[in-house]
Amino acid sequence: MGKAKVAFFDFTSCEGCQIELTNYGDAAFLELLNHIEIVEFREAMSERAPSFDIAFIEGSFTREADRERLEDIRKRAAVVIAYGACAATGGVNALKNHQPDYKEAVYGKDAGQPHLDSSKALPISAAIKVDYKVYGCPMDKYELLRIVSHLLHGKTPVIPNYPVCVECKRREVVCRYDDNDHCMGQVARAGCGAICTADGIPCEACRGFVDHPNEEALVKVLKERAGFTDSRAQSKSRMFTANLRSDAK
Image: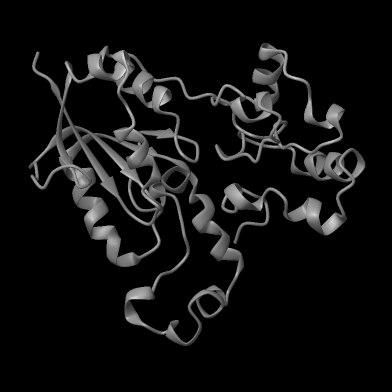
């Protein structure tokens, strides 16, 4: 069997996940290159391929004009993977969905310029069928490697759907609340290895929520254990989960 053809695409994002890909240099990634052929990747090449086995898409879907391009990628790809928070959930971009005057606030008198026209920030799955998602801001490069490895071996990739608290306990990390801090690990999707909390930094749920998160309990613990005001506790999780919250519009 020949090498799997792989392509990378970007939409509304900072392109940080693509940059993370260029940071590879360890033995695991070099071994992967023995099994894949990168046939499209704007950051590194100008060639265009008619079809590919796996398409990785970064960035959120924010313009209806992008739907045609996404549908074209879907037609050419056997498997589509949304990688990074923006592509998987809408990410930080989705904050604007809760700010109707965001263009005026950011761009001022230039807000009406046509190149700034956009609508709600949505995950890629709002436009096309997505087979798998790699969460995180930026995504975890080793998780991406595992997913590609599983696909190449005919296995179904396993995407974590349990809270970061589980990984904290596995690593014997002191709970941020026991350190008089705050944290959203109880509702945040794991898979990061609890790298932030292990370094004394509260989890901000950059990988989004687990399925069916208990948002009421999160608000309660932020108020009772971290001393947040009600308004701050209610809005705390919005940064990376604006499209996942129960108040998403």
